[in-house]
Image 1 (cartoon, rainbow, N blue to C red):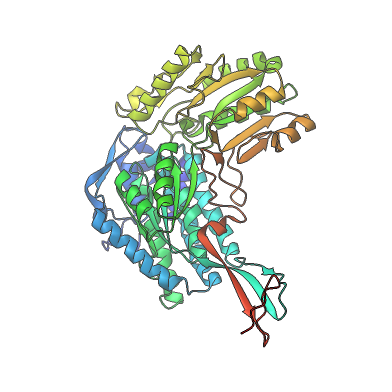
Image 2 (cartoon, rainbow, N blue to C red):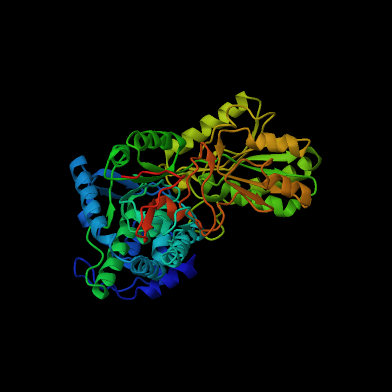
Length: 546
């Protein structure tokens, strides 16, 4: 932890270019260390703002109270946009799109490259802000920013590959081709559990495809969104200095507020594409609103992900993967492992190992070294966890853990011991996803039974199998195996790499925000025909002589 903070301090010995015109000296390592000796996050929070050269004054107000999951500290009160202001942002983004679409795609990629540079320069500070606002442990906060950097690199390369096809035609003197064109304004709705990565997945691709972006972040994590928008504005300023103001104002806009702002974005006819990440409930509402106006939605929703462990599995490797997948980010990832399906032949030794791990895994301040499980995002998340565990007991389950922990860190901070829940069957509560560190354990007697259990829920994001049997592995990833968008072998329920598929099936929404051909979701396809003969060639043998 201190190594990261040392790097942060060294990077910011002087703060330049503040909106307020201030210059501040860097903060000493001793002072940063002393922050952890107090219950308040405010000194560290202020330091991060300084390192990002971020002034919150233009954003302050009374609409949003931003609380730190770490200790319950209120970081700031921010203004929410009004519907009139929101519409002005959308109109401004549309005007920006009309200009930006005429910029060559490789030049558009240059803007994204500069954004990636800004993220690299400020990785430590932005990653720490993610940890402070979302409650992630330090490595996960930094890892999310690294993912932002990776998608920028990916999108820059993609900017030279937005290609169509030439189609064989039956008509002489005739050429037919597929072309791709920008859509317009892309609305991005993101959730608290990945407060910044989701924006970058969408924004990097949307920009190289020639679109503008309006981002509505979770009302629980507006500060990280403001920081990202701040870095984007810096990247645009540098880009425009070299490209004659090619990137217009309004190209990247930030919309703060609650559910009503997301609804406005989803219903706006000037937002042809809406990408939404979050709960299934939210996704259903967004999908209906967008579909009613024949818009396009890109949805990546909750997962309720499962892992199968077969008799031939490396149990030590499986235990490590299970622990990370199930308790990382306090069980609040869309790829969190929620259901463990274990073959009866190995259930006893594996569960004994997991019980030992669950009893010893360290829960606490996400900024401290050695802590693997940070806080739940708020009291509502803790209440939902307790409700799910109560239902599990009523449905025959046996619960290990799941109690509140680390109350000394703050009465408004909600830490919970990860819960290991043995279930007699895949009952109703198991088929419902709760964003919390709950792992339901089921047993099976065959791969067929395991696959049926894996597929027997409405969600379909990520899945995994642990086995050293080639036939079992191949069966699981085949069309007769997992019905999820992502199927992994001998690794946890990951979201794959940034250049691969991301998204899912069934209630997960089927959306893809990254991947080799995900750019097509941000563009419209057209067919162009060119007649270079002196005749009028018709198809299908049609004659029309006049």
